[in-house]
Image (cartoon, rainbow, N blue to C red; front, top):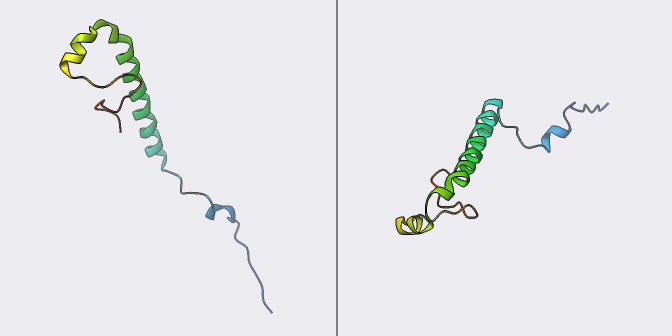
Length: 72
């Protein structure tokens, strides 16, 4: 006589492993701080003349933030 048993967690194999709670909290904090930094850059950008920015060689803009030091 053959019997089959089913696990109660049939759908768990298809899901990707969930990040630990602390990792998710720290990721949210980092993302929040990055958004705040971008808002501050945008808010005070008008105080620096555009020619000074170009002369200093600053290449980051609000539309292209790849040159910013805190981007991943």
